[in-house]
Image (cartoon, rainbow, N blue to C red; front, side, top):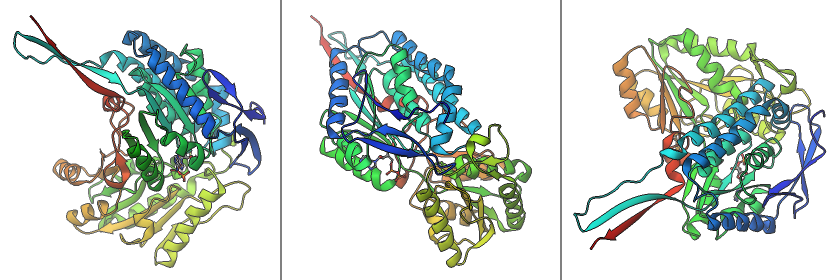
Length: 483
Ligand code: ADP
């Protein structure tokens, strides 16, 4: 238990406070043991946090700053996170299950968001619109006010950083609802905001149950903008609540993303894409490469390579997997693991074949074998629904049109990939794929700088990149009549 306190509090209006709903127990999915307790917010706590954020917004303490000053504060949050990475990465590993080196990558990624959006703060500019000599007209980008950030458990620190950094850089105040399963390491964002000098109430963080605290936050009349990453069903509930208050949302709702692998693809290089695309974070990644749609002439070779990669992964407690390498940690919870294993069992019952894996590991905790399925047809549940686990489905195709149709044939549309040496073929796919982001010859190519978001049931709005800044500002037009 080294480095993990017996209990953690919520951060509301500049104070670390207990929760009106008591506490929630957090389990280490790498061992199945109790890890710690976290204060559980009720609707009254949510109300206090929103009121504090609304007060700070009304005071213009952030909005009135010269953007360079605000940007420096945002960057200071990132610097604090980077400086405390080694303290918090083991905590993230213990609550989430990922190997220690993956936790370090996540925390570095969180720091990077604050660096990037801190740098962007002074790039947010309006324009002047000519109306003839009798007028001066210009636009300004005004912060919405109180922004709500409802965070998932797969990358709690990084997902919170992604939206909070952009919201603060543009002068908004923030209320974060942390995920029930992983509410501990995310508290480093509140510590960092405190250390960086954000006034009490500018950044609030609370853990609470989704249907209680999450719903209270999404439906709060003083929340002016909502960012949500999570399941489709919860996204719909949040968007519905937001609509009642006429509040905009950014929704990032997952995917069933496909890599199209043509007959001329470089399969040596593609092995890296398999490794990262479906087994990073035990597949609990919304933009995971959960389907490979491969030309029939390379099908067996791809299955062989994927199987070898899956079998080479050493699966066990993340805290014992400190170095980057062929290893994988626990899934976040036994419930998530059982859900994934259940989907695999149903796929097999429907006619899919296990090339490798497919079962829960007989270890304490929440471990799942890295899994590769063949004989998957595009209409099966496993090909249509997000597993959110280390489960890869391989589907053969004959023609390019058929490949695109399979890739596009789900309700989702988050990311997609095409692997080929033929530029024309790649470009045709980039135009045809129904996805917010298309990778050519490298899954996950891009970074904090590149916009990310979905089409269809994968959601709407874009995070990352300069695009995300526009989620947090509204244009005001000012027209001046001259005499
Ligand atoms: P999962 O079911 O995989 O945990 P969710 O989409 O339900 O994914 O959860 C993502 C986030 O949304 C979590 O912080 C959760 O507490 C929150 N949440 C769940 N239900 C609601 C709801 N009805 N209103 C607002 N937030 C919710």
